[in-house]
Amino acid sequence: MYFFERNEAYEDRIICIDDEGRSYTYRQIWDWGDELTADCRGVVVLECSNDAESLARYLALLRRGCPVILIGKSLDEDAKASLRDTYEGEYAVNSELGLLLSTSGSTGDRKLVRLSYDNIQANCDSIVEYLGITADERPITTLPMEYTYGLSVIHSHVAAGATIILTNRTLFQREFWDMVEHYKVTSMAGVPYTYDMLERLRLREMDLPHLKTLTQAGGHLNEEVQKKYAKWAAETGRQFFVMYGQTEATARMSYIPPEKCAEKIGSIGIPVPGGSMAIAEDGELIYFGANVSLGYATNREDLSLGDENGGCLKTGDMARMDEEGYFYIIGRKKRFVKIQGRRISLDKIQEDLQEAFACEDIVCTGNDDDGITVYTSSREVADRESETLNLFMEKWQVRARFVRVYYLEEIPRNTSGKVLYSKLQTIKGEGR
Image 1 (cartoon, rainbow, N blue to C red):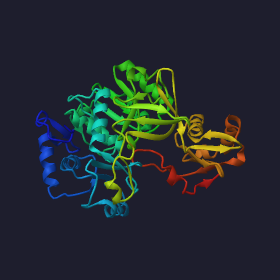
Image 2: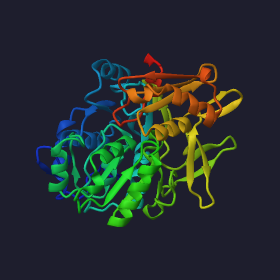
Image 3: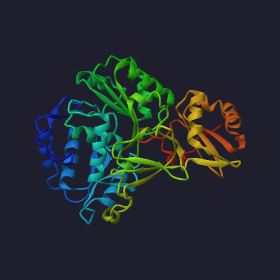
Image 4: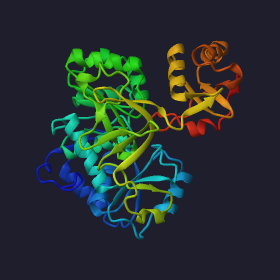
């Protein structure tokens, strides 16, 4: 049985509580969804947010066999129209196709990941298993529903018959924390940017006795932050999971068991149940599993294609494995540049600069021909250009003439907090 189908064992349980304090049983959401989607046929573009109606529509469309393209309600109207013109309607599609997601989380690009019903269920099952999710859980939504990580939280908890606290409020709103306390929230999920905000809010000093599980994915977590949360979780009887995934693998590919989190700092962990990993000759990380997507789509004709990946995903990440079988990402395959005859990781430079200046708002781009560009939204860091150039020379033996430093008012990010490097390269900042 798929998690989105009607399950008599759950029908009287509460599936969600919304921002207005309204609670809905599983049966109410199923019935409401069937009513809302009664006239739906073919591929459907669904505007969603973290609310009960979006949940009802989404689960119902999966039950009806209508492939769903999830987009955020805040997406600009031109992008929405483009996606609808490209994909929405009745035409021949692969019968296994259930869900289409953008790799960026914003769904503004016509290139989508094709996910089958079996892909979704396989990843859902493995997440429930390694996180130990039960019907007693009460997660709160901290990520957009259209983002693969945020959606996986919904999938896995619906599969277990749990109660989801659906909110569109932000971490900086008092009402969010009122909900956490009032509904006795048991778990929270976040990307690295989320944990930066939680540190500012001093989460580890809050009195939240029911909060037992925290999970992190969506990018490399600062190692000092990982140490802090691993230590805090161990001392307070909580579980902190560091995870790794990509939309192309539905959501999760690996995780660090909580008892190993303090020991395996910087690791992405071990493969999720049902998955396996290997490192190719060139150093690229390869993932194998039933959660690997069918492939990509850039037009409606692509939706009729079969499984082009065959359960094998080339992640685009360069990695190493330690003697205990734990994997570590050392950079993106495309995030390396060759300057002065040396191959350099832009991710490593970015991480080292953030540490040197104690500032997360520093990002790097570059290529073999033009050298490296450093962008920062910190005036203080931008004004310390000479220190930056000295670091490049001393730490990476890169001369100043291969480096540029720009100030931006804001680093472009998607809805999940990830840096939009492609957009960054088109922005002209203030040169220093």
